Image (tube, rainbow, N blue to C red):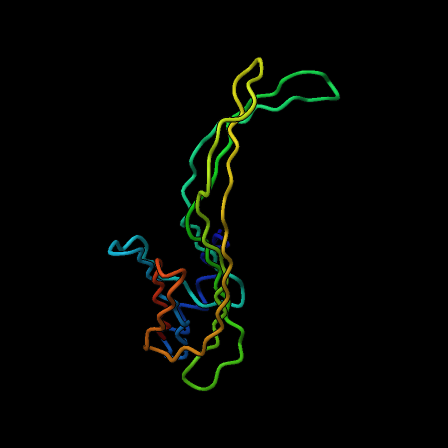
Length: 161
């Protein structure tokens, strides 16, 4: 009995052997913040969206009074400063280039102050600042596109075939 994954691979192997296989474009993404290179990846360019989440998860305490049940509720939560990106090929590029939409946000901690003290712990009030951005660019195959975000993050996008 032949496995289903082997059955799916047979047409690909046959196409490679006969020379009829085509290359799938690959998006190379490199991200730096200041002088630090913090991320590098290669992803096949498909019709879907590709997200990159470079946010940190920093825990803090939440304490709230449940008015309905008349009890205090305390738990840990996370605030998430950093960069979040989503890439999408819009499919409208000319020969030798692709239109790429890049959207995302940069989040940073604006303030963190102690809040109300309840029976289970103290609430922490976290205020985040979020800046959204969007860029749609025509990217030539093999030529890097540089996107500078918030004068702090540098995103280098290259499409290779």
